[in-house]
Amino acid sequence: MTFELGMTVDQSDPVGEALRGQVPIVQIQIGDPQSWKAPKLGFEDGPEALREQAERAGVGIYVHAPYVINVASTNNRIRIPSRKILQQHVSAAAAIGARGVIVHGGHVTANDDPAQGYVNWFKAVDGLRLECPILIENTAGGSHAMARYLDSIGRLWEQLAKASDFDQVGFCLDTCHAHASGEELTGIVERARAITGRIDLVHLNDSRDVAGSGADRHTHLGQGQIDPDLLVEVVKQADAPTILETHGSIEDQAADVAWLRQRL
Ligand SMILES: [Zn+2]
View 1: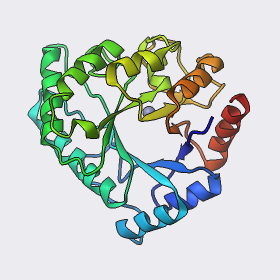
View 2: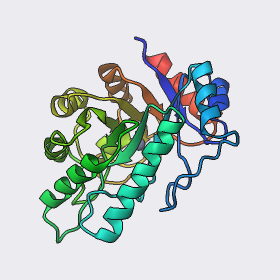
View 3: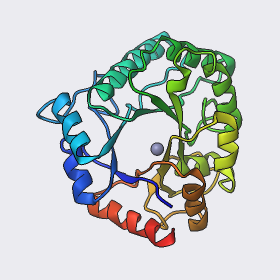
View 4: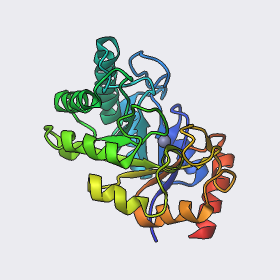
């Protein structure tokens, strides 16, 4: 099978890192993932130069949005800045020619009607200028998350289908998150696709925690709690670009690349 496998790298030299790691795609973060600040590109020569360099080298770049973003929130002081920095990241990603911006599903709180969270997602997407697609990622935990379970992802997609630019909304399936969420990994690609109609990206990670733990702790392939055969099955069935988020250096992630290639 031919599919693109890539790594998570620093934004200072994404193309160089891709070439060093011998992978066709990479994922970066533009700025501090834990901060509400506007994205700040760490590539010294600027967005246009990065775009050209990536094109010339044939390297695809994905951008992960900050983790603080929660467009589902019923709290204005979270929802409004979330929309703002998501738009800023979409624009920054478009400027470097990125393939997509990965964003977590977010959550409401115990006192909220979950329906409001899905409506907030619709409003956010409907109001975004999607110069670059957004890829909504399933998350691991929380009792009031918008994209932890396939059922909730179904409710989310029902709302998003009404948004303008819905064709610019994709889905990112994270294996660690799915395992930790309590969803069965066997056949998950087919079940997810039945809901979203698409899997644009796989985040391929093992999980340090047991199924259903709700914990978001990635680890290297084969070193966690996920049955290795199921990781391979997801990759085969998704047949989509796949990014490792197993952390560490290029060499650490190269071991994951080798682990997977050996099993395919
Ligand atoms: Zn992920």
